[in-house]
Length: 201
Image 1: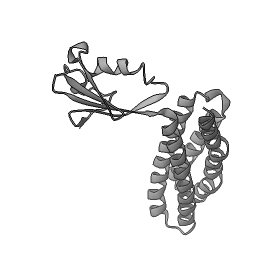
Image 2 (image 1 turned 45 degrees about the horizontal axis):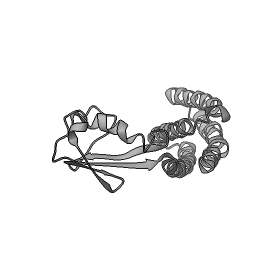
Image 3 (image 1 turned 60 degrees about the vertical axis):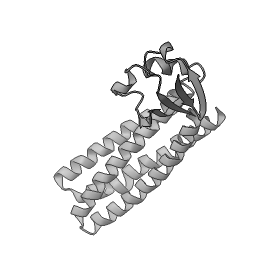
Image 4 (image 1 turned 90 degrees about the horizontal axis):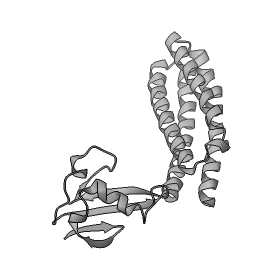
């Protein structure tokens, strides 16, 4: 019989009951509902598989010798870790914005532009993480994230225009005031709400 290991517990089952991994995972959903648990790891004979990918191993027939590992983790645990990571990321972004603004004030524009590109990439990662957390907790209507995101997009557009025109005075002001202020609002209004809601759940 094939063997499945779910959160370190070994379960023997008849491989003929399930066509493949795609048909097996919904069976496990009864014990680990997807709205409360995420699949942290899925592996077949030692090979890690992304559950939502198009990996052919997901649809190949389960064989008698197969060893399947599925590790579930509660969503709230992941969100706690993610909330902490996002808070740390935001702190780093705010520091880097100050550094970038200082470089611009000292006419080190080329170095500042390189750093600014990395800052914008980090902001994108931050927003993706925030959006994921809010969606998981289903608190979209309770927080002003849409307004903050619209303002953030307008600030980033203004930053891009200032870069294009090489107007480094305006660019410095946008970084020091507009961008910093917007991101600080995420820190004050959004991150604590995510943390508190997750704790209450």
